[in-house]
Each structure stands twice: as C-alpha cells, then as structure tokens.
Length: 453
Image (cartoon, rainbow, N blue to C red; front, top):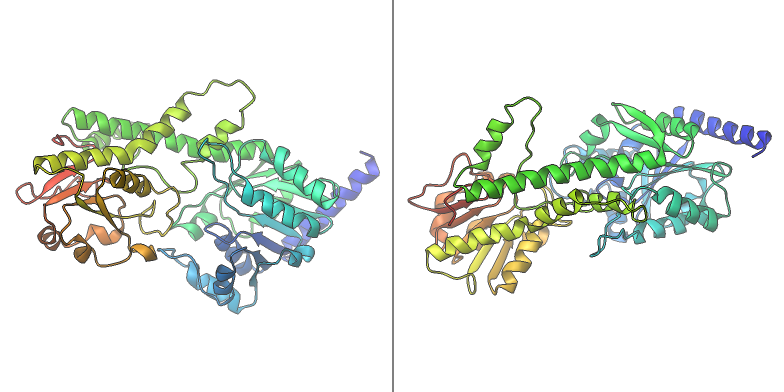
C-alpha cells in the first residue's frame, strides 16, 4: 500500500476517533436483544445519537415507546430505556438504509451452533449483507457477538468487502469486541467488566477504546481480532469445563452417599481452589455453544480435542440425571414415571430471567414426555408458563425444581405438599441442600446428595 494511502487512512481514523471523543459520531446497533439493547441504551445515555436496527417489528415498536421488551429482573434497564427514548437519543427501526449516515456500527446478533456443533451464522451473515450496501465511507464496524476464532477474517471481512465494494483499512475499519454480560446484570456487567478490544489494526483498536471508554469503567485491552475471538470463547469454555467437573463430582458424592455441597465448601477452603456450582444443566446463549465455537476455530488444524467435548457431554446430560432422581423417588412410592403428573419449576436457563435459550428444562421435559409422563411447567418470568404454583401442583405426583428463581426460595412448602398427590420434591439446583425438607413429610432428593436410591 502506498504511503499516501496509508496516511490518508490514518487521518480518516484519527478524525473518527476525535468525533467519537467529542460524541459527535453517530452510532448504530444491529440487534436489540439481551446485549444490543443495553449497549444502545448506555451509549445513548452517554450522549451519543444511537440508531437501533432490529428485524422484529413488535420489539421495535416497544422500544420506540420506551418499553423494554426484556422481561425478568434487569435492574435499571427499563428506566434507562424510557429515559433515552424520551430524550430522543435512541430510536429503533427495521430499515437498514437508515445506516448510511452512521459512523460506528455495532453488531449484536445471535451466533448459535447447529445439532452438529457447527456455527450457524444466519443472523450474522444477514446483518452483514444488509449493512454492506449502506456502509458509510470510513465507518467503523464492530462485531460484539461471540464468534469462532477466524470468523472476522473468513466471514465478516469478505462479506463486507464484496457487498459494499469497499476495502477494509482503506474504505472502512473493522474490529471485534466481544460482549461480557449475563441476564440479570446486563447494565452492571457492561459498565464494570473489562473488555478485550480486537482491532484489524492497532490504530483501529485504539479508536475502539476511545468509544468504549464512554461506557466501560474497567480495563480495555487492545489486541488483534483473532486474539479477541479466542479470549471470549476460551473464557466460556473454561467455565463449561469447571462446571462439568463440579457436576461429575456431584454424581460421585451422590453415589458414595456423601454431600457435594459440603464437599465443595471444604475444598474451596484450600487456597487456589474454586469448585463451581453443580446443577441440573447448563443453558443460555453462551456456555453451551462457545466451547464449540472455540473448537471450530481449529477445525482444519488437526488439533486433538478431548476435554471440551467431554465437558459438553457431561453438562448436557445433567437434566437426565435429575430425571433419574425423580424415577427413584417415584419408585419408593411404587409409582412409575409413565402416567405420572410432574410439575417442573423453572424454564429459563438462569434464575430471575426470562432467557430460555438452550434451557436444560427443555431437555428434561422432552425426556419425561418420551417416558409418557404428564408435564406441567411453571416459570414466573415466561408468559406461557406463568400461573399459581400451588394450583398447578394440585394432583401432581412430584415437583422438580430446575431453576432457582427467587419465588421458589420462599414457596409455602406446607401448601405445596398438601396440593401434591405424593410428597416428592426433586431439587436440581441444591436450593434446599443446606436446609433439606423434613424427611418425615417429604421424599426429598437433591442432586449431589446421597440416599437417593
């Protein structure tokens, strides 16, 4: 590349950085879900003019009315959305042609994997293809979605260049800054957690830092795109492996008539030890698929992978282990799973959230129904499963707790037991592990505790 072109590009990037620092840059966020909506709100509140692009018209309508489409407990989000919409700092649309004046575009769309654990980039490809024809000269495109290592180079850049007719680092700039948020803590996570800022060039990374400094009160570490992609997928793969160990430990303790919750407490007293929480399964948009994204990054590199696939198998299988506890408890009452009426508490993957992506409860429900059990699901945050727990428990043979929603922590156990046909309570999250239900009144089974046969 000629020196004059390089200097021109650096000048354009420098001008963009100044525009960002002065908050004159116009921003856009593609995808107004669990990540994109709070991101758009925070940049709007910081003083930027933000346009949100979302394909679901109903969601766009709600946002433009200042109403959050996200249910569940999200401290501050509804109020912040109402504020920035009222101040005319945030507007949502379904039209990509509105992006022609936007200086910075953030992409926050889902990136799931298919049944063969291959990345499904339909939403990402669609966003890129729709954005490219309307890409402003010298705009900065930042992918915040979690993607397999190499995706920026192999998918994002080629689509943008081909469909826009522009060249990266000359006509537009490109970066990857993976989000680090979880439902229930969206705003606080965006503000307080560090970010890995991957730029296609070091200068791009520095420009990205100037942007994120407006909303992030933590470290912003500049790096390249591949490193950023690896870091995000690796951190969730790490969590998945650690949870898998905790789950396997729970099964060992259960078989040895011990208590994983007490074992975990004592192990973690040793310096440098941090056994994670075992439980009825791992859900959400990140942990069940990010390890596969990390693995996919070396699909053609002949790297032998053992730990990641095994951890995924263990965690995917945990809802079936809960079903085994249920079968054993029913057997003590000479009752089979077939024909039993089972109340399952919690369908979201996380407590006090409406996010049911990759819900372990779905795996459990599918299994129970294949065994010809009648299943009733309750979840206070998902509209189709709302209702009165005690009423739903009437004539059920057992209750299975799959999610530690706060409502379940204070449930009237006496009324619940009276409503049930059989006093069976299966605790898949160890909610009552430290204060087990009265053995004279309940048949209580807890994942990771002995006496479950």
